Length: 353
Image (cartoon, rainbow, N blue to C red; front, side, top):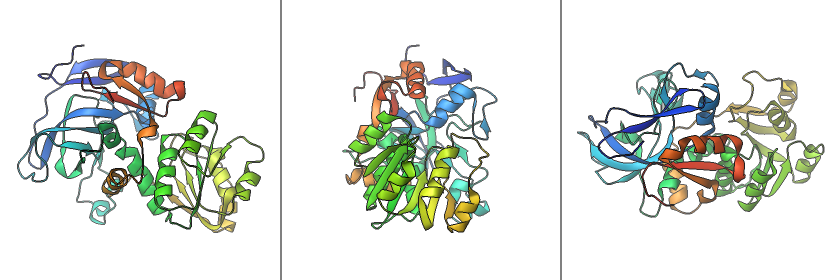
């Protein structure tokens, strides 16, 4: 495959673990929309699930699909009615497009729109294509000092912003984060930026805990440590827990570690959809249990955190790949080899981060 600017090459998943590079139609910017030359796309855990298993939670691939939704790029053309963007602008793209008219949308909860079209969620194609088009209102102009990689990572960072805001994390918070993958780590960064006094992380992988330490975690513990509850308690009472793994054991730990009257946000989706947890323990402690799904109205805050320097996501990008190395990129992301945290694919030939 030779990438050229006169064709729109895309990486298409036809069967498990098997990509084909194909040309797809060149996008045209309609009213209120913009065409974008995709520059950088980060690999999300959901992308790996579709690639390896053909599904992620309730979402199932039943045909070819273009993956990728953590993306930034350059505007190539704008449609009528677009005033805040122009060709040449560098942007990050919020990947979900709600219907704008349902009850959830009209009350501001557009991430819960039943008709939302989200990049790389079947049957909607994603951003591992050279050119895409997108509503201008969901494109955020990047300041000159914010890199394409940082722009791509606004997507997972927005997940953390939404979860931390729903959990009411403030300067007095004592936070437990279960799961030190990319989402757990961005939750660490946002909790710190919001002033949390103590932030503890748990995980099964020592290399991820080492990254958490470097990012400033107050304490880190192996999730299978038989004394983990005692060690967490020694740091003080946990006011909020952010469960970022989807693990039944991690959710159970959060219930038992969170103080009475505290809050648990369930964010991770890698575990079983039905779980056996000590619900009565949570009830007896009057723990507020909340679900946190994607984000809403969080991209602007995520961009502000990065642009102001309050959050530094650069250390999370551990591996870089060219567009032609997509297969290797997904294999690395799945295995977590070489200390992989966030793998980024750069669709612009010759780009060096």
